[in-house]
Image (cartoon, rainbow, N blue to C red; front, side, top):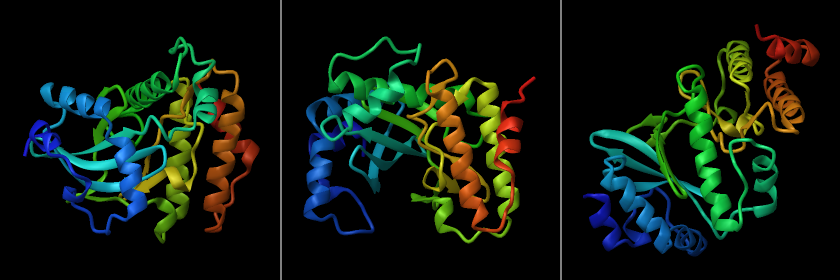
Length: 250
């Protein structure tokens, strides 16, 4: 079923999901699929970026993730909710970023937020393990799907790691590579890392360039969060040494 045809008779109850969609979920999704979002999905479909919208992967206050297809390939469709987004919190990651000139209202901020995640992924995809950026329009972002047969890879916090030190080293290396590309994730933790045989970083919307006035603070927080998580597995690394290693870019 094509996206355009699907949206013409869209109903939350038609979306496939392993979980029962309760009243609160319907309220959240009802806010996600406003008229502008419908038009954005249709625009992406007309460009061949998205062929089919299948089911709900995760539902959040500020964004919901859907499983879709681009031809035969599975994709993740991230739809940011304009009404539910935290205007104040998002603003501190946008202001000071030279790639964005500013925003006049909540909707424009959310559109720039989606563009921000797409640009951040585009900057480091192929260099670090992260979803492939495929397309973006307004508040809809289409990315490579991390998982199999419509089932997303689990968050690293929900996996019993057999090689925690290896995974820790990989994540630190990703942070260093991003830094070499003048990017800081700015919200890195076990909640924003999937595990698909290896760590996969997600949720790049908060990512800032080094020119951002808070980039140093965000980097320190990222490193601290990573070491704290892997420390639970007994992985011991000196915070100052890791931070110095990340910043030592030739």
